[in-house]
Amino acid sequence: MEKPNLSYINDVASGDEEIKKTLINVIKSEFPEEKKEYYESLEKKDYKKIEENVHKLKHKISILGLEKSYELANKFEHNLREKDLNGVEDFEKILIAITIYLKTI
Amino acid sequence: MNCIIIDDEQLARVIIKSLCKDIESLNILDEFSNAIEAIKYLNDTDVDLIFLDIHMPGFTGLDLIKTLKNPPQIILTTSDPQFAIEVFEHEFIVDYLLKPLEINRFKKAISKAEKKQIKISSTEVEKEISSPDSKEGYKNDFYVNIDRRLIKIDIPSIYLVQAKGDYINIKTEDKNYVVHSTLKKIEEKLPESLFLKVHRSYIINIKKIIDIEDNSVLIKKEVIPVSRSKRPELMKRLNLL
Image (cartoon, rainbow over all chains, first blue to last red; front, top):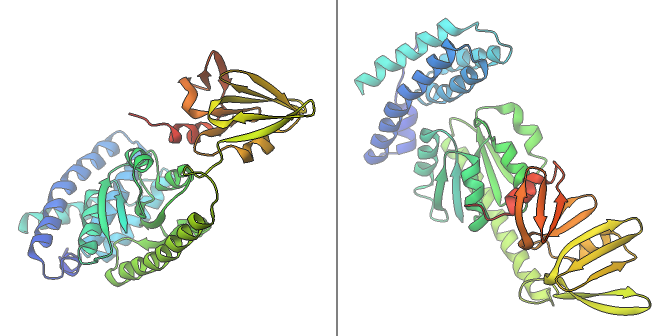
């Protein structure tokens, strides 16, 4: 599986350490919240909410340079519009990979 | 250019702020995590450019676009390429950027907005120079023909205009005038800042509203119906707390 990276964050910060720190801190604080909301909506089988949460998380997946995972999340989001949970396992693997990565930065 | 950012995701807002940091022409006034808060702000503040996320829970960016009467320039930011065709119908949409925002593409969008802003500013100056009307930008009165007499009506004193067959009933603080005309004709004479057509048979002076219920407003002692399609426009025009 591809690994998360800070390539995009570095591009946006363009050498400004303060901006880089801010961006990482925002990801670290926002991601666990969104992940929690995602699992809550999944438990309730609230497809609209699940889709909204996947949409939000999808942006972070792309920010962390996970291109293939982003495609998987896109498909999953699309399936959710049809109330189809196909892709839920792959999406969970992506969330786990990000959770682990965020502990290292 | 004075800008605001509307996006429910904090990370997206921080990225835009970071990308704007070195662009001298941009002044970020504020940021909003939902469109409703932004609408209230836009009612009171002049903004030249909005960075607007389309996909937000509840009230979306597209809903906000439909609500704005005189929208400033808008740069849309979203992860959904399928919205592109629909939104480019509006000329105030400067550009459409896919997330994650690509830095050079972002700068290109800003440059487009800057060019457009120069055009808008020069048009506004021309309008100001050529306008013969009062400071408020509209005439304060007009004349109506009643029984072969031209009678002057003071516009701010009108609280209601009601259509009645081939006639309209213009109601002012002091007197009512029944005139052979249409709502469409009088609507052209009334300043948009004060008046709103809330129903196919009624134009109201929004400054005279006493209260609003679901589908009606109270003006003086009259309960006036509000069409469902006009309600968002009415709500937008009110100075809500």
